[in-house]
Length: 150
View (cartoon, rainbow, N blue to C red):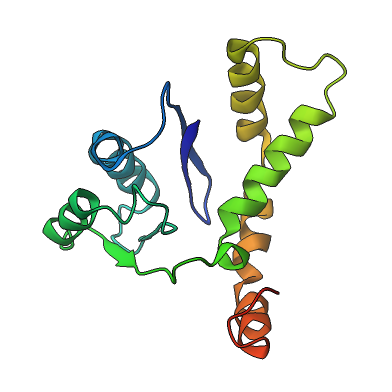
């Protein structure tokens, strides 16, 4: 399992998790990796943090931490159960496609981790920008189906 962060400007760190994500484990990632990424990419304070509503993200401990640190960054509240709206799903699909098209598929978890890191670093900023620019279309499509699947 991995945790990742990205912005209009560039890809952030891809963090390898040796176990499933819980609210407590999530809180071990955010202070170190989110803050450092934000300070590099959005030193102007204009960055906005968005996450999906995965169980660890919506846990009591994570919600409390985000509220306690709300003066440090803006947090965009995401609608629950809305994978069509989450660009990280597209990014993860691109990573999986890149892994699948390798002539030598990864044979070990470490091989897979190496491929994922390499492919993560190869995603160009323009790819991210295109996904972000697609948000008005995604919102319109979701409104057309009254929040059903698009």
